[in-house]
Image (cartoon, rainbow, N blue to C red; front, side):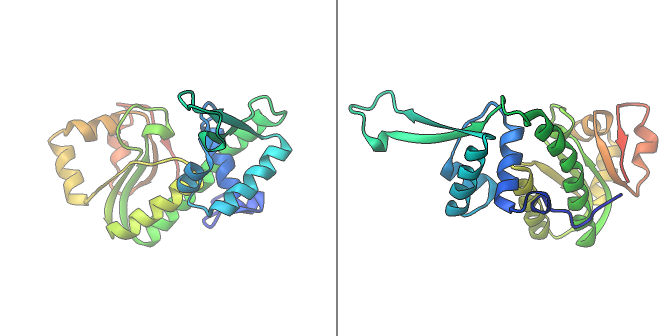
Length: 216
């Protein structure tokens, strides 16, 4: 069942907290400093600090203080606090599993928003969404204002806590590149993918060429 207006904060009570958890759980071996987090999840500094402290108090996040090794003295300004997810937290694996499922709802929400702002003939998720080494994560075929699409993708990135690369093509460009067996497009269509919209019946022709999951 689709939930077109789903937002992570509906589960966690705070947009900042939800986005922080998503970012940390998707980057389990990465440490982040506060101002870096504010940029990645598009949140206010004070809000990030407050929610980080809440997560540290619970035990989900670990706070570390790292000194510059080339500092001439042990100055406070030469220290930075970094944060990373606590992989030994009792509910760590449960949270990771939950957020993987939540991503499905967030992706469906993005698709609904894109559809409501344009005429979309074909849309699929690939790249990082299916562990596929390709320089794009979403392929969109159709007509939609570039600025509007960028705004929607920016919100999607903040929800996931991850940067997303997308490719937008017109219907005419897509059909032409498909006809001439364009290498970039062929790699996408014949590789791992999750098709969300297919008004062009593309997957009927390529289903035998590459692994695919169909979502409607």
